[in-house]
Length: 165
Ligand SMILES: [Mg+2]
Ligand SMILES: [Zn+2]
Image (tube, rainbow, N blue to C red; front, side, top):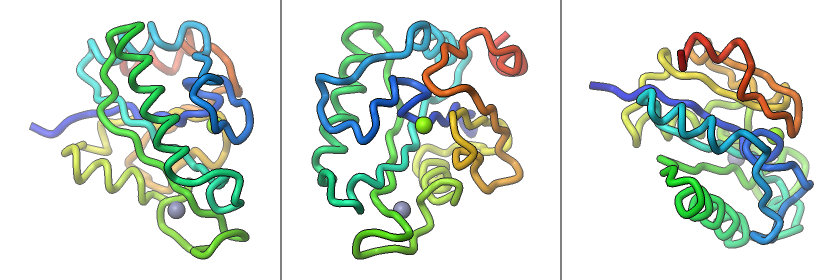
C-alpha cells in the first residue's frame, strides 16, 4: 500500500520565514500549524518537508547548518507536540551561485519530491504540496498544490477540506 503525503515548504509555511535561518534558536512555529500537522498525521498522511536552502550556494552557511536546523525543527515538533516528521529534504543549490548551478532539486523542479516518493513509497497523485511561494508549485501534474500567504496560519484554509475532513 503506497503512502499519501503532505509535502510542506519549511520557511514561511511551517516556521516563520526569518530569511536564511541558520540558528536553531530562531525556529518559531507559525501559530496553529503544529496542531494542524497533528491532524494531518492522524488522517494518515506522511509529513515531508521540502525546502530550498540557497543560503548554502550563496555561502551564508554550510549544509551542516541546514541539517542542524532541520534536525532541531524535527526534535522540537516531537518533544513539544509529539509529531514525527517522516522526511526532510533540502536543495542547497542556486542557478547563479555556488559550484553546482544546475540541479533537479531546487523547487519548482521535482527532484526532492521524486526522491521522497521513491524512498518513502509515496503515491504523488494522492498527495499535496503546500508552500508560500510560486516556486513551491512543483513541476508535477499529479501533485496538487495549495499556495498560502507567507507566515500565515493556514489551518483554516478551505482547500484543506479535500484532505483532512
Ligand atoms: Mg517558503
Ligand atoms: Zn538542488
